[in-house]
Amino acid sequence: MTNIRIKAVDIYHPKTARTNDFYLKHFAEKGKDISRFLKMMGRESRYIIEDKNENGLTMAIEATKRVLRQVNMSGEEMDMIVFSTQTPEYTFPTNAILVHKEIQGKAQTICMDSNSNCAGMLVAVEQTCRYMMSNPNVKHALVVGSDHNSIHCNPDDEITYPNYGDASSAIILEKVEKNTGFIDSMYYTDSKDAHNILFPACGLSNIYNPENKPKDMQINWIPFDGTVCVPPAVSSIKSLLTKHGLEKEDIGSYCFSQFSLKNIEVIQEKLGEDKHKFVYVGDEFGYTGTSSPFIALYKGIQSGKIKRGDHVVFWSVGTGWQIITMLFKY
Image 1 (cartoon, rainbow, N blue to C red):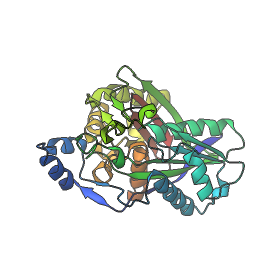
Image 2: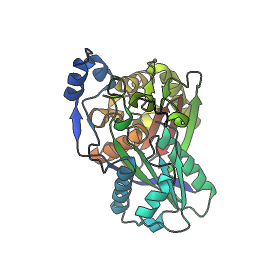
Image 3: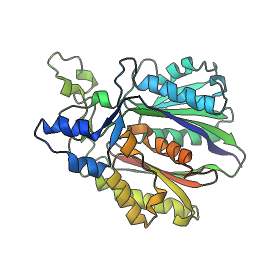
Image 4: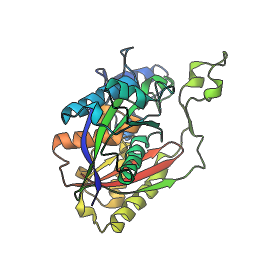
């Protein structure tokens, strides 16, 4: 039986790490105490781009080169390149085309950008897996997720500015005739409060307005209950396991959105699961957006927590909002 497995995963992050002290001082000077918020979100440090030559595209290129080196493959062996981002460095051409150029991809490569916000890389992997199963010409696919979040945050906003970090993850998907890889996925979408988070705040059609201030073009975040996505997350996970005849004891690890440690803890409690199965990296990386579940996967593999043959549950939530839950046999 044909399946799509994760052949390799790698990451890249900038050199500069900012601890909570930087943000606590920054907001204290504005008369705000964000210590409780940082604890709830699970933040301790995050990597931030300071080099003017770095951006979301350069991070993605470096993560891509690392994952190719890891398995001794070349760009010419990639039949498909999908670039997931909500902060594209360019919209003309696609960032996938620019990655293709850097790794010297072949002429027959399918290249496309994808955006499902913070759920983006999970959606891109899921959609690529399903496409690979239907296209006999695609044996290997590169999916790279990269958000340059920090530059788009309003320094006066205590929700986004101290929460986000910058990083990228790249994975290689491979078509195999083995009982492994992608199993299934579920989506849940609730769009009634779709305007709670907007970027750019003014809309692209207004970015050239000379009266704009930086905040008009940065992320505008209206506070809301971030735990609203928890019940459908729990329901989706339980439904996927039941559908495929699995119990929670069969799951080796959970790689979730790293947006909120509190959300992860609540989901873990409602599932009645062992907290050690949940890979958390948001204390080191901050919230990296689209790439965060796969940075968790990478760190889980590196630590030995995730091994070949393990069942892994992925989950993330995107602005608007939409969740995706995905079941894999790694």
